[in-house]
Image (cartoon, rainbow, N blue to C red):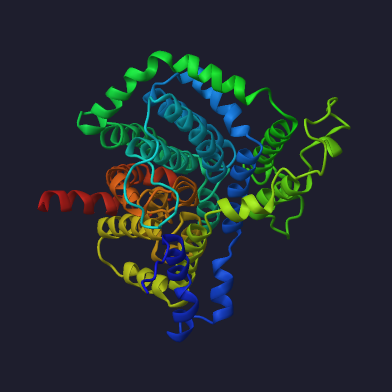
Length: 484
């Protein structure tokens, strides 16, 4: 009998390999390896997935989708720009992962309406790797989804509120300040946003022509009755119900809690107890508990909503476990846990110490600087930047600022894989975007940002950190250019 293994099952099985092989290889004890999987940020991802599922269960995402459609119409380019702005604002002020979870749910509802109206084809006809699984999205839909996670990554790079910036500041122990990071990153981020949007327009939305543009142009002929179709769908949805309003209020509370946890620019609620750290898991799962605890109909809502439900009866919660079990991307999240464990095992094996020792030897300041940028880019492709900044960067600091600073700034280059950032994992799991599409879409932003971040760090090195070796590095750079 022929066996079929689903993609999510394979992901989960492969992700657990560290539990088996790390102890066998003598890298770390199995209890420590298991603990490394379930980090604070992993529970943040769980909480953000539950947030998205709550929006779907309460149909909040459909109400918000009609507001978005009112702003952008049936223009998919305008939709991409609108969503990019929305993600950037929430990612900068609250959290990139939560921003992507919120907006991808709204984007799916908007794209579903486009599909129903015939102005966009949402699902491809490609044969499924997983029999009976969810259909793969078409390339224009993938382009919209990837815009969300890439924008969130870029917004987080200039935010004083979210990681990895906080971990980078802690690693440099008072030498580096947030204004230095923002000064270094602001130009690469602005230009990176433009390049990223343009690149996605080219390869996923047919900016330069090709079959994608022809198909979108043919479908645009159906836009004549688009407004009438949307109005009819909106009438079918009806007015905002109590559970949708409750969900929206709680989500706004989540964003406020995330913003005020530990903003660093002013005291947050996590600073009340200096000896106890309340991480990302507290802020995300704390309100998610309310999603599961607050009923969604008359038996509870009668005290503040003066109308009876259509069907009185039992009181379901805003977030039911059946929906959570069905819609949570368990395989992708476990794979993200493996990426955290990879960083931990690299530290326990002595890899980071070996690299720092090798880079500490006299090899020329420019070579150290360039190696720092390359190592930072490589490690943040394979693992989330927050984990690398927390576990690897303090060790890399022993190699000196010429290596550690470009290593730190390169950690904002998180485009290539679903495990490069929690926001990428959200898009991969909730949007059913496969890893090779991340590679395809992320190669140009990765190369561009590597060049831009490295150049900006080089020119602003003396502003951010003491100029102990800036002159030597500049002379080394000039010598290398002349030799070339």
